[in-house]
Image (cartoon, rainbow, N blue to C red; front, side, top):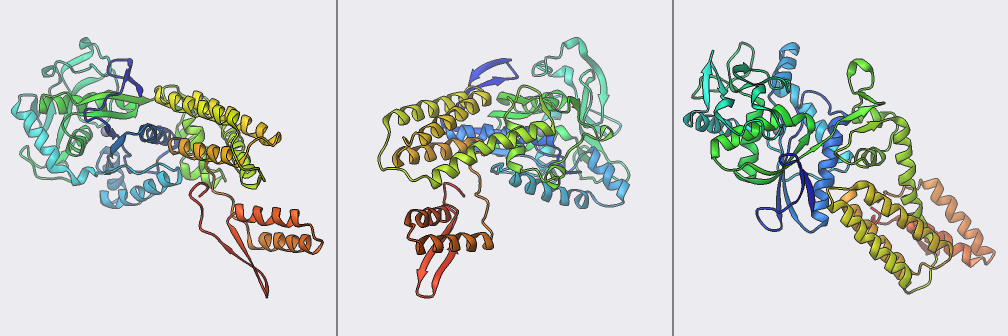
Length: 469
Ligand SMILES: [Zn+2]
């Protein structure tokens, strides 16, 4: 697979340190509010990346941190007169519900910052021993002019670095390359832990160095996030990790571009700020939301509009319509060599597109061509059962990476089932067996099993089949 590496600003072949096994760190949510669709653009893209690596036969170990201590969390706890745990607990739960809703595969580890304070203190101690820190007013700072490669990821010129200037806040501007805080001295009302530098709490950047290296090793393959994370967050992670270990931290850095809403930056003040929950409450299909978020290439900014969301739902309906046709089609046995060859070519084209730095337009372009080919073959009655099964298998396998093709068939309501059974009985009575078989197959395709008994027709729901469930 080729990926665009932010560090080298080039497309590179991804070669994991351990053959066949990619170690991936993805910056996770700061849990003081519901995640918004800009956050989910990044998480959905990272899920596509993970699933594509798996489609290509690689094993993935993914870590996503949960930032449960940070400036905004503490400010909210103080404002509400409560603890940080009480602020974060409901949003941690909401985060997992939301990623499940969007079909995001679970990472192997979701470490929480507050559960890794000793690991963070250990890194800070090593940095102190290596002369890369200093103490000022009870806080420990990283001295960026003592770390020569500082600024390499974000392309900062050395002249932009303000020697000796300090910053305490977790997030700050690109123009403001300053010594950043590793350990913040205790302030009234803030949670604090004992440390060799006195009581206090870690800075935000330190947690990702500590938790990534704990679960993935001092050097690992791939680290991702939104472009907003490049500076200062990821720049500081490199400084802390490489400053402490003396080894390269991460081989490949990948970053997703911004999400805009109606062409503007999302902001609560503009009324264009959407959480996933807002969109679901307005009746939108999570699968269409996922598709819209991943169908724009991750390095291009994505303009979210409700028109685009409606179009996304319409495009997915083409997959659903084809799958319904395949389930209901009455086809001959055997295979069609011409169709099979087209299918194999398009299958390879989709995989190649995804392997090329996640070229989603190429992948979906090929898939929609496949839908047209399959519909045309069905129209001509030239899609025999073997080829149709091959098509279903390919769609399910490729959807392992995309997660948008396989729709759960809408569940039939009991009265609809009863009505179809009555129609079938009427067809049998008038000896229209073709029609009665058609209805039986239609019901079977929707997971309804019929049993003819002396007392009449009984029905039950079958377990969902792997292909359509
Ligand atoms: Zn991070």
